[in-house]
Image 1 (cartoon, rainbow, N blue to C red):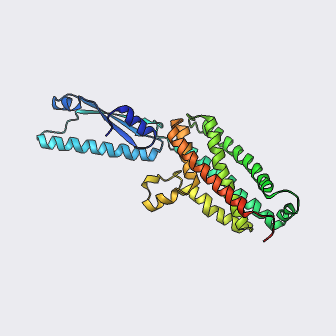
Image 2: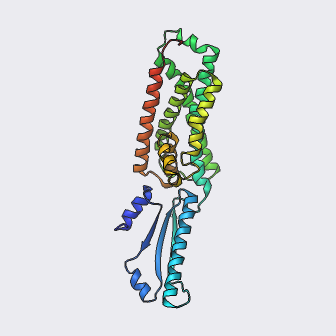
Image 3: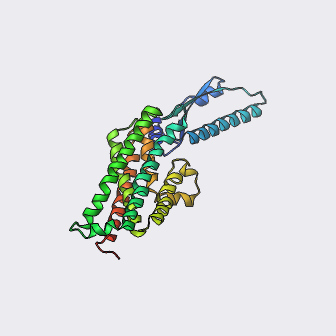
Length: 293
């Protein structure tokens, strides 16, 4: 229990709890006097399905308590409590408000990781990469030349997705657009680093595509929290989700679109994306050499 409503609201904003049951200080006295008592119920509606489940549990617990109280008193069931439900961040419990932001992460994964792995592996197959290695350009310059076009393409896809989300699907964007751009940049660098690393390991287009689907797209679709609620997964699967970059980006997207600039969530997930970007880009640069072996 929290000592104040402000503490409880802060915990709900930071996703430490999924809902709040608020009882006033005179709740017991009103019940004993037979008066009408009010209970405030606040549910985090970012995940519409989870909000409905939490609301159902609260309704069931409330009805069970009333039934037991009526049986103990030997009286018919009377409703002495007036429940006031409030759904935060997604009052209408529209699933598209929860799903559409997550789609942006899936789209950027396809552009950043899958497309990059396929195209660069194709260059290995056609021999154009060998021609680049014969030039005086450094390997870092070659990799940068591969990163920039797909970064522009990925950010363009993100901007188009955000525009469709806001103007076509009427999903609210309550957070800062600048923060969204910065977070998207971090995630796209992770995706591009993974795509380049895959293409350097598997220089065959078909193999690179299969690896990219298994390592990047499927985890982004299944294990990122985009569709399935992560705390409801088995504990072993929850541990695996910590190495899925899309998990952190989906959390940032849902927070920015539905809740606003909740900095504890944004900063923590951005830090995770930054570390992953440094890791994948660093490993790619270390593995890339101007030789054909």
